[in-house]
Image 1 (cartoon, rainbow, N blue to C red):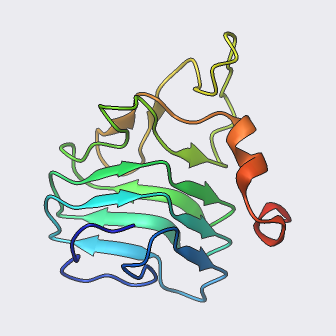
Image 2 (image 1 turned 90 degrees about the vertical axis):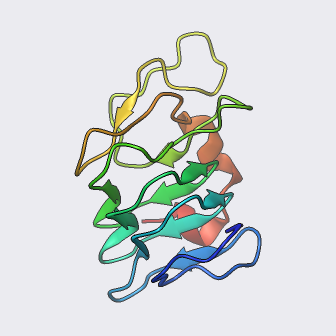
Length: 140
């Protein structure tokens, strides 16, 4: 679900539980986007980034499943929040190879550093959340 429109948005619609799958060139792109809520989306097998934020601030992104794109995410800023401060759940990143979940709570034990700036997801989702993906997206 996207709670308000990005200035430029490619790939995502405003419908809940959107799927961005095997796009030839267009990631979900936020350019100069502010104060948006992006949650419960799938971005898979895109030739570009799953979600890319450029010159954007104050956005909250959580419970998104980012799978097998060129890069799962990119954010050149440091004020976007990559997890929900209410649920303490972030996003699933297929490229996060160092995720360990020693307490089996579904959250990786260490933060995921978001490429592009100084942002991070303090509560990235562990591999157990991948089971909730549609079968077509799980296959690489």
